[in-house]
Structure formats: C-alpha cells, structure tokens
Image 1 (cartoon, rainbow, N blue to C red):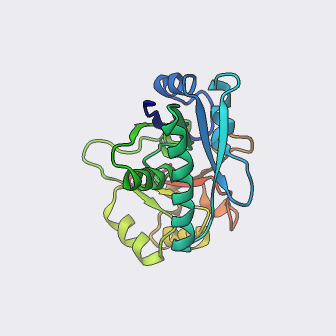
Image 2: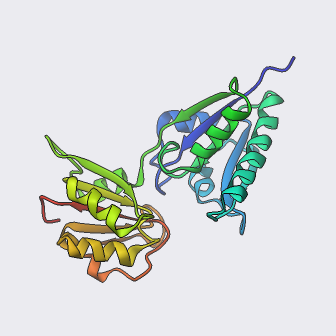
Amino acid sequence: MTRQGTLYGIGVGPGDPELLTLKAVRALGEVDVIFAASSTKNDYSTAYGIAKPHLKPGVEVINLGFPMTKDQDELEAAWDKNAQIVSEVLKRGDNAAFITLGDPLTYSTYGYLQRTMLKMDPSIKLEAIPGITSFHAAAAKIGLVLAESKESLLITSGVTDDESLERQLDVADNAVILKAYKNFEAIRGTLEKMRLNDKTVLVSRLGMDGESILMDIKDAPKTPHYFSLALVKKNNTI
C-alpha cells in the first residue's frame, strides 16, 4: 500500500522572495508537487512568481483555478474539484505544497481548501507553514509600531459595509484594513468621517514592481491596486 503524502500550506509572504521563513524554503525545495492558485480567468499565480527562486529544478507545478465570484455553489464546486486534484496527488505518495500569498490561515484560499479536504478525508495529512503577512511587512517598511502596551489591534477586511467598519474602528486603538481596493472610496469616506485620514497609510504592491506607499490617503486613486492595504494608527500621526 502506498503511503499517503503530506500537503503543506505555505505562506510565501507579501511579494519579496526573501521574505520566506527558513522552514518554508526547506519545504518548497523538498516537495514533489507545487499547487498554485489562480483565477479561472487566467493561469498566472503571483504566489508562484514569489516562490519560484526556492523551488527545486523540474518540480511539477499544477495550477488550481478558483473563480472570483460570490456564487456559493460555484465556489464550493471549485473547492471540491481542486481538493480532489490535490487528494489524488497525495494518494500516490507525493508530498505537495499549496502556496499562497502572506499567511496560509489569514484571508487565504488555503483555508477553504483545508476545510474541504478535511471534510473529504479527516485522516489526510496537512501542515500549515506560517508566512509573513502583508501588514507586518508594510509596518516594517515604514517603521510603524502596530501596537504596544495596552493598545488593541484590529485586523479586518475592506469588503464590509460602512457601518460595520465604523463600529470596528471605533473600538480599536489601531487597525489594519486588508482588501482595501474593493470599496476604497467608502473606506476613505469612513476614515475621513472619523478624522482618521491623516493617521492612515495606504500601501499597494508591497515588495513588487510598482510598489506604492501613500502617507496621505487623499492622494490615493478611487480604485487602488488589488494588492492594497491600509494601516491606521489612531494615537499617533504617521
């Protein structure tokens, strides 16, 4: 009987190929198969571009398509299909890695894949290898202390309604708004309403070509790049 392989969910960081942990680099250099997520509309994977310098020559690379949709049935069908593809690779005894931007368990496609695979087979061998998040890298880039002493830090998604965002920001000392591209005009409006616009930094394409750091969000375009986040420091003018 063939021994089942292990799937590693590996966070490859925000964009700089040097921002991978030693454990991630070791695993990427040892696995037999790399799974890279991409939109079903194209086969390009940003995570693969970041991880590529650390892969062993000739490693098998399989793109897994995930639709950019809110249709739950379509999403679940894609998760089931991709989980089956991964499962077949593990069943033949190969070890594999699913690579994802940032951290695999923070707003990541890997979380959906992990849940689906465990539902299919609770005995499947999975291991998550944490990655450096975009907001930690962004804070390091500008020298911003995210939180200290008794301060609270909110990590939230920009894909939310104005009232929810305002309530969350109201009770937090500092905040990270991920996925800031989607509803940026509404996000900017909320920040201006709460007089936090001059305490907010917008960071786009961190560690990639075209990197942008705007210390005043009034200078930001109506629709920032897909890879954009906002850092809010209430008690300190940035």
